[in-house]
Each structure stands twice: as C-alpha cells, then as structure tokens.
Image (spheres, protein in one colour):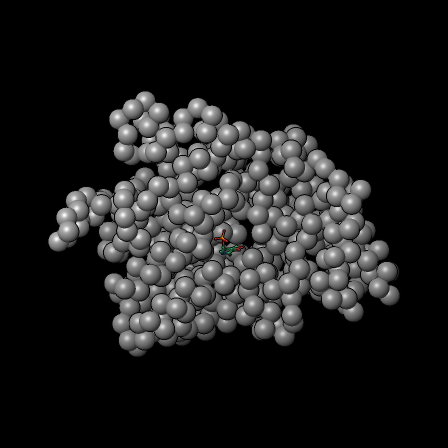
Length: 405
Ligand code: PLP
C-alpha cells in the first residue's frame, strides 16, 4: 500500500494554512502539486547544465541533450511505447491534440469527411477538431452518453462509416470521472481501418497506461496533471502515423536541410519539435517519472480507488448531494450538485474553510448542457489525499448545507 504520510512529506505546498485552516487540495484534475524532487530538478538544471540541446558540441550542451533524451526514454517506458521516437514533447495535452488535428486534417481530411468525438470531451478535444472540420469542409459527429456518464457504444458503432477519418475520445472524463472503454472504442474503429486519438490527460495520473496494449494511433497528456511541471505535454504517435503526417510548426530543430528554394524535414521525433523546447521542465518531468516509478502506478491506482470509494460513500450519505455522472468505472473525479446551493457559492464558502475544489463547467460546457445545469462542484483526487481529508471535506459540506438552509 501507499505510505501517504511519507508521500505528503514530499510535497511542500500541502503543508500550509489558507484562511487559518489547513489546506485540503482537491483540485488535482486542474493541476497537481509537485514533489520537491521535481522542483529541485528544474532548479538544478538551471544551476548546473543550462544549455540548448541537440546543437552544441560543448560539455553543457551534451549533458543537457543526454538528460533531455533520457526523459524521452522514460516517457516511452512509462506508457510502454515501442520506440523512443514515437514520443513528441509539446507544451501540453492541448498542443498535442492541436498538432494531430492540424497535421492530420491537412493530410487526410476532405470535404464531406467525418471526425468522431464524444459528448464528454474537454474543450481541448472539441475545438481543434471543430476548427479543422470547418477549414476542410468536414463534419464533427458526436458519440452520446447515458445519464450515468457512460458512452452509448451502440450509437458509436452506428456513427462509424466510410467517411469517418478519425475518432478522438477521452480516456477519463474530467467532468464526470468516467473511465471510457477505450480499448473497445479503438477496436471498433480499427475494424473499419480508422485511426484513434485518445486524450489521456485525466487517465495517466491515475492508472498504468500501456499504449501498445490499447493499440491507439495517438495518445496525449500533460505533465502538470501528473505531478510534473507546467508547460510540458506528450504526444505519443505510432511511428507509421507520425511519418505520414506533415510538420505542425516549422523552424529550427525540425529540418534536415534548408535552402531558399526548399526545405526538407528531420526524422522523428524532431520533425514535430520545432524551436527550443522547454528543457528545464522536461528534465523536471524526468524526475516526476522516476518519482512515480518508485511508488508504482498500480499501487497509486489501488490507493486512489479506495479513496474514491470512501469519498463516494461519504457523499452519497448526504441527502442534498446529487452526483453528476455515476459510472462504476471511474477515476480521479467526482462531480456533484448540492440541492438549493449554486456550485459557485458552495465553492466560495468551502475555499474559506481551506478546501480547494473546482466549480463551474470544467471546460466541458457540452456536458453541462446535456444535463441542463450551469456547472457542478468537482473534487478531484491525487495520490497525497487522505481519508481524513475527505472526512473533513464532507463534514464541511454538511456545515455549508446548514449555513444555506
Ligand atoms: N483533456 C482533458 C481531459 C483535460 O482534463 C484537460 C485539462 O483539464 C486537457 C485535455 C487540457 O490539458 P492542458 O490544459 O494541460 O493542455
């Protein structure tokens, strides 16, 4: 089992008071806190090896390049990709999705074609496809979900047709917490030769992800949602598909040869990494992955599952609480409404009590529209949260309900 007190000691930010109350951080789906080893890795980089990468013959340049490529290797191992060059560094899940939408759209999408997404996507996995479809004269088709927050797989099957060019679906919903059956989603698409992008931003922090087992063509996530620095994202792509896509951005680093008449592009992964990357934070992410590896993702998943069960039991025991999304397959996130209290009001009072929760539409406005609500209160769990914090949270929630009575 996870030794949560030992883990908490690794996260300096957690040990503070807000408004004279101990901080209880339950907004991990927005961003997670960073362990000291990660903060130190970023600092150490600037103190000892700061240098541009892949271009300098000098000592510092070589050290920085080696460490940078080691990060890529660790990411490969972490998500079990076949090749190191299938790992592209971006600035976040959003940029990873934009990269695929832009490059894939230009290469493969024509008028009348269709892109399939689900109704529970984060805006980051809606708007890039919407813009690309508008540019290419293509149509966006939407997989609906059941009231409990599970995808309607029969409707999905019917959406797939000869015009479908790509399916893009979230692994775990940031608004509902549902873990989608992405393996089935992928297998059904593959049955028709359609590639699949999985938005793993809310999955990778909570479970072991194996991209070869999933067999998806693309998988996207952000370091900052998994205890790593901000400004680092990953795009995993199957070699075969990354090779088929044109560059996303252009400039230095991504070329093989440039003349005024014509430029040729570098091999993977450099073809998709134009300009100077965020070396310091990518090295911070290396420290994150080493940290998570020492704990073990399976142990983190088991611990969080217990925590999730406990939180759900406590919330279900409050008659005024209505869960929004109630799939038995869930990770990380619990969204709910409180009878008679606007989510924003509840969030504001909870904040004064020391509880950092999120209120609103969680960048998933279509989900809120489907339920006909303006937003929810959302708590999202991380590996440093405890049962005691959740007890304190539900006690505080009861006090808020009393207050508004
Ligand atoms: N996808 C999902 C499911 C998310 O929850 C988020 C962020 O909340 C994103 C994508 C976008 O991540 P980022 O803002 O780090 O690019």
